[in-house]
Image (cartoon, rainbow, N blue to C red; front, top):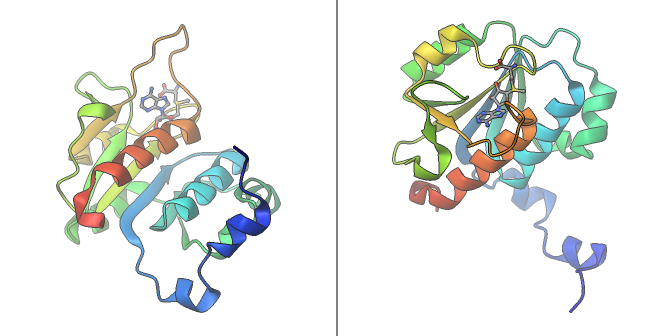
Length: 178
Ligand SMILES: C[S@@+](CC[C@H](N)C(=O)[O-])C[C@H]1O[C@@H](n2cnc3c(N)ncnc32)[C@H](O)[C@@H]1O
């Protein structure tokens, strides 16, 4: 047994032209006030890995493109990134276009991600800021609230880790993406 080499990994990639015409998975990551450019870069890398529609970065006035590029490992070239100020307005617009809004947050009424059902499409996954979490207005606008059970002593995990767990689960469950 051995790991695949970088060359072997590259050989399985489509061409740039094929990529450009490749339909994306109808999932949006909406980042509500996430401040760390490294965390945002990690989300961009995730968005590329799961070939999702786009990443909407809301309320991140100090976004540092160099740091984002570093953690996204250059994948920002392939991912649609939209920068916005007001997450509530953006979410209302997406809702009116038929998007299902699933906020990832530990709430009184949130469900364990393992039991989440993504029968609806397209879907927006909302993640909250490192300090304050998903805003109360966005919680109220959400169609579903999802949490990842915390077994240890910490109250929460890194926001991009939480996003990776739920996004991977969504992609594996959502038959409408296949
Ligand atoms: C570090 S947490 C925010 C903690 C913040 N002190 C608070 O009071 O909400 C940042 C974000 O990561 C996500 N997150 C982290 N751990 C989570 C978990 N166990 N379940 C669901 N979301 C989680 C949520 O989107 C949250 O808004």
